[in-house]
Image: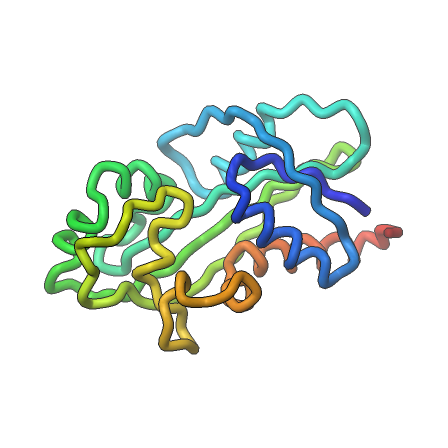
Length: 190
């Protein structure tokens, strides 16, 4: 079975390909100019993004949305992660967390449309933001927290890992695993 993953982020696509290949599935990427709301849950945002796509064949299609949550600020930045980082950058994140707990977690939602059904799947990755965020980091908007986030169970930030190592900790992989489990329970033939 082949999934169509609508995303403009090639790194997300590569991660999904690795995660689903482990189960024998293929992933094809397609771009789409999403309109992203500024309120709701990850599931709400992913479902809304999925509703924007008009897809005529029976291929399963999916989209995702993700963000990071700081324990020091419950519920924040969450769905506003990209906007928050664009506004604050690493300097602002450093100030925001100064003197606060560094605990954080990523949450991602995958929304799937297949055979007329829409399902969402959640994955989370827990860890911590490093204490001394370097101020000379380039502002990478694709995965801006990878250079400053250490997942539980490791001592390296995500950007120091290979793609395969990052996938092992990935909230996106966890959501995709839940998707595969749902498909398996529904006796999907590959």
